[in-house]
Length: 352
Image (cartoon, rainbow, N blue to C red; front, side, top):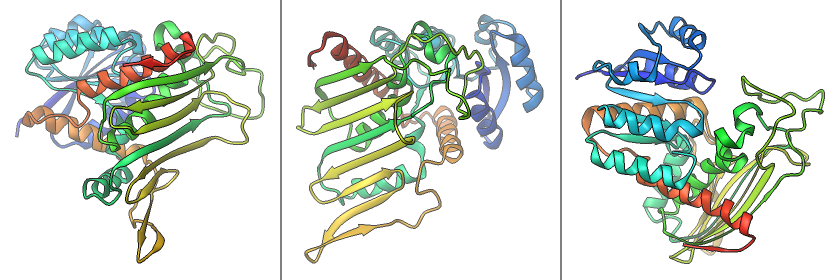
């Protein structure tokens, strides 16, 4: 089988998961790396024994030996790089969110449809073992029709600062960074229904709380404890055309006792919790039962899920099969995120 030659664009923290996963895939070759900070690209090239360090994006796109790119850059550059890569004949894996705005997402979708290349969006939770197991139960009708889902991803102290806290580069705060994952995984497991309406709220009261001492948290490479132009917290109610609904809340910072992640789905025949760990609830012989699947990863295992995501992308590029996380799905999620921000700004329901 032909090997897929990959260039990773953007050498920030998330790029390590791409580098490691491609290294572990026997059908992929790490051909090159590019970053706007040359020293960072060189460091990754040396760490992962990558032969080519590019000095410009144009150099990457003009190299006919590059079959595919992984885009690990700021959100505000996703659209431009994705479109340019597709037009230059490269397959594309782009980190979530697909873009910063709906308008950009539609332009990427158009470019992907005009090309004969694959574009996969980095919805890594779709590739987790606990997700795959729950999806198999849902596909076999064990939950019946899912009519309600509820998801939370709350950090009490977790604003990474830097570009994450700069709305011009990120497009938003915890909603677009964390909410994108839990909204997508609920929507995906609910069968990807069409949105009918959205109500939402965003709050900016606490900033990045750079004054807090004695408690560590992840900080971006360009962390600045003073600058912050994104929301602290967001919540939303998404109603779908089939009558189902999704309630979600996310935060970078919140006066909460502890961090919390929950993903719950409720159907006509049963329910399930995906996070904090997989459990399925059903009813048999007039008795409610909790089913605990015996699997290695009951909760989200980042490394394992990321490897599955990269493996799926490589296979999609080499075989021509449709990605599990398509550009169309990326556009749909971007519309939901934008709808929540719009509803919060206008303080009214947004109807689709």
